[in-house]
Image 1 (cartoon, rainbow, N blue to C red):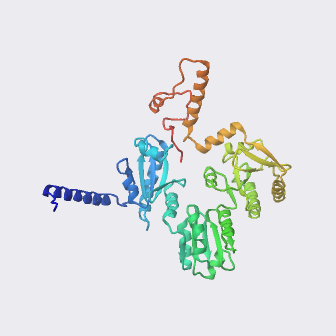
Image 2: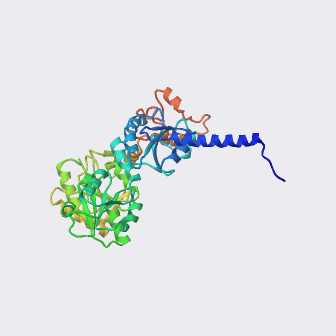
Image 3: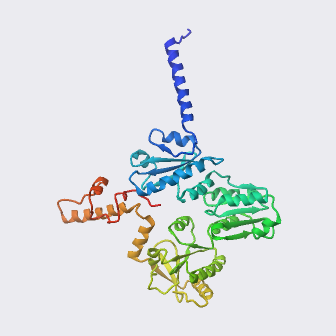
Length: 441
């Protein structure tokens, strides 16, 4: 028996199809790369993330001062990123208002930046100034390995790469040799191979035979050369050990960059990183670092980061410079007989320190208590200060419960904190911006 479709039903189906086509068309037209920062919410977030290959999303709160300072930097960066061959889009979400999205992506601080590559989120821990942010993000859409076929191509590649990441150039290497390394360390370095180049490039990059893998650290004016063997094990050792300069200043940012490096840090504490005596010592440390690539060498000045130096028992009353070996936990090692470095013959003293460490003539010391708290606060700044507040409140609550107090302490809401001029638990310097989730730039 032949089935017939009623005309009203057919019209309804056709009308539904037309609506679907129009919706798809309007959705496609809606998300265009025009160099503006997109405003996203619960209703359009998923479609925007699906529409672009790479999106940087700023999860912010309107009352957050750090968010307000970041916003104009994103406005400046957006058109530059949109103009790339593989454009990058910047978007922002009021995570204080659209809390479902904040919860979904574990947003516990403002501002929090996340990169969505083909819909997959990852944390953004790079710079937040517009020009540096653009240079940093360009890596995410660049080829794993760039092919350079002339001297000018090499020069242009180095200039475009900027100074934030190390630059690896394989002279006379096939891209397949370093392609795996390039994929593995794409977020941390630029990789390229030079197919055709003149003798000028050999002089400029200081190598005398091919194949050679050269790594440059433009911001530190350093470079190293690797002539092989280009087996995976040896190649990866060279790549990993040269991700950082020979001797690096220890700052909040450089400590973050060391997160996935398993090497211990030989830390030299000086009074002022910028005085001539410290610069002379840093040159000596570079020579030591080149012969001890299984360690990371760093330095910090009391003038530059006093709280951090104080956790190692170094302050203005300490005899400086002081050297320690730190495993980035709460313990560090000092070497017997090498507690400090005199001004005379510092190269020999650095050698004796390393020799004593290798031989195990060390003393394990706990990082100092009060200063350790200051160090932690300096790392996390205001972002998680409220967790400390909650911890204190919870502790008091337990104590009072044990004592049988009638009324437990109460945690103020943001509005209550704003209305109150003082608080028993919130430091005076902490304004209404210092809420769960605020992150400093």
